[in-house]
Amino acid sequence: MSAVLKSRPVRERVSAEEWQLRVDLAAAYQLAAIFKWTDLIYTHFSARLPGHDEFLINPYGLMFEEITASNLVKIDHQGKVLDDPTDLGYNEAGFVIHGCVHEARPEAGCVIHTHTRAGVAVSAMKCGLLPISQHAMFVQREVAYHDYEGIALEMGERERLAKDLGKTARAMILRNHGLLTLGTTVREAFEVMYYLDCACQIQIDACAGGLDNVLRMSAQAADTAFRQFNRADRPSNHKDWPALLRLLERRGSNYAS
Image (cartoon, rainbow, N blue to C red; front, side):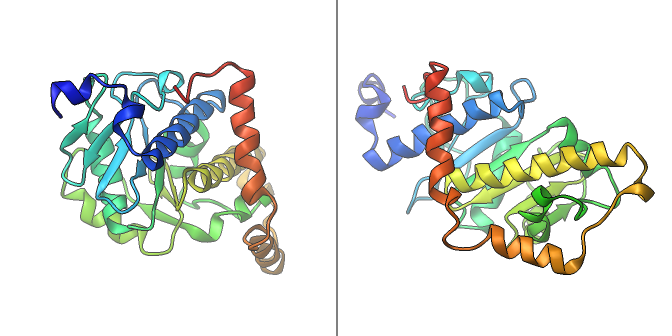
């Protein structure tokens, strides 16, 4: 990017569509800080620019509560930086994971990856995510699994990760590592992560009394809950994101700057 163009504010040098995507993704980062999904400066969320093989990701070195629409990094499908307002670059592991998912699942408008305590704990359980809570039913039947291969710095892992993710899963448990969710929008990916992480927290709490004491719901009840969560006219599909943005605004967040 030329020095002249970079001297202009980000909002003035991107399309209205990209700016809105930046605002939503920055909101997701700052909400994640509130919900305690952070791991210092690590983990990463990304959003794909519609119609382009380019996506936005966090600058490597900022806490999630520092992420704004203007400081997100834009990279292409090969990892080349197209716009980096802070000059901090991006986490290489973020490109390996997110670049892989965006390439394998072009409908994924947003990908969220976390290392929460409960998420990592469930990722280390042989049983995986159990059907023991209403929260789990939101996503349990759409969860894929990928075995741990080390820190995600090797490009060769991308092929195996994509294969394990498949073509329909909206969530993945990265064994001994953490959680990953995707959605057509930032809002959808965020909601899936919310339910997945809550389900993991509930599972860890329930298992504290012994795995043999955990009550699994019936297949019929699980089917019913899954259908109810995924009905097309579910009100929260358009009500929850505005409510979350109001939460940020009440806290004086600068996410949209």
